[in-house]
Length: 375
Image (cartoon, rainbow, N blue to C red; front, top):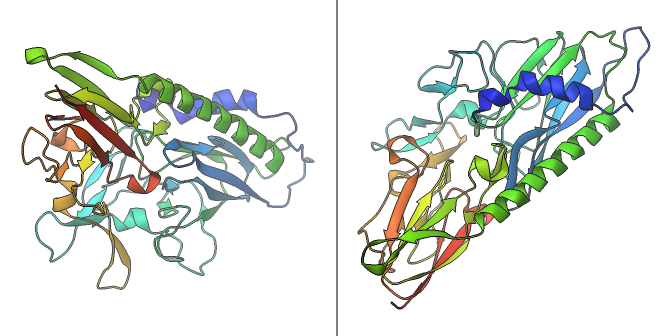
C-alpha cells in the first residue's frame, strides 16, 4: 500500500480525535506566541521509524515549532510547497500531482564521470548561521539540512534541531528529503485567537503514544523476518532468501524501517545460493580486508563547505564472479536505485563464516553473516 493511501490529510482527521484532552484551552483573546517541540524519528542502532512525532501538530498563528532529532538515523525537515528546484528532480509522493523534490545527488564539477555528491539543498539549512528564525506562510523551500545525533562537522554539517515560525492559518505538509517515499508530517496552523490547541504536555503525550505504537510494529517486523526462508534449487542445492531491511508487509506500516538483514545470521551448505531482496536503499557488501569503504565520505569543496561524496567504486555493483570468493570485494551497490533493482545473489561453495554489511548503514551496525557448511 503506497504512501498516498496513508496521506497526511487522513492522519489529521484521525489525530484530531486522538489529541489528549489535557490540551490547554486559551481565552478568546489573541494569545502570546509560544514555542513547541516535535521529535524527528525514533529508535537506536538498527531500529528506526520514518516518522515525525507527533505526525500532525496543531498550533496557533505566530507560534514557533522546533524539531529535534530523536534517533540514530539521519533525516531532514523540509517544506517544499510551490518550490521548483533546478536540475534533476524526483516526484513528491506526499504532494499534489506534478510536485517534485530535489534530486538525491548532483555531479561534482570537474570530477571524473560518475563521481557525485549529495544535493546541497538537502544537506544545508535554508537559515544561515546567526540569522533570525525563518517564517513560513505556506509556500517556498524551507529546510533543516541533514539532522543527526552526531554531526559530521559540528555547526556546519549535521544538525540537531531546526525552528520555524508559522504566521498563516492552514494545513502544511512537510517531508524528509532523505526518505521522501515514507516520511512526512503536517502542521495545522489555527488562527491566533483559537481556543483549543494542545500544549507541550499534550504534544509530548501524543508523540510518546505514536512512538510506542511504532516500536511495537518494529518488533513485529523483526520477528517476522527472523526465520530463514528457502526453496529447493538444482542438483540438491537450496536457494535462501534474506531481506536487506524489512518489507512493509512485515509490519503493516511503511514507516517502520529496520536497518537489519533478516535473518541476520544464516547457515547454508556448500553449493547453496543466497538471494537478498530490498525495498529500500541498502547494500550487501563483503569486504576481504577491513575496514569497509565509506559510503558517503565527507570532503571539503573549493568553497570550503563539506560535501557528502559518492564514488562509483563504492556505489556501483561489484561482482567478480557468481560464486563467492573470500579474497575478493563483492558488493550489490544500492539495491533500490534505478536499473539495479531490488535483488542480488551469490552462490557459496567455500566452507566458513563470512561477515558482510550494508555500506550505507554500517555506522548503525547493519551487518550479517553467512556460515557455509561442507556439502
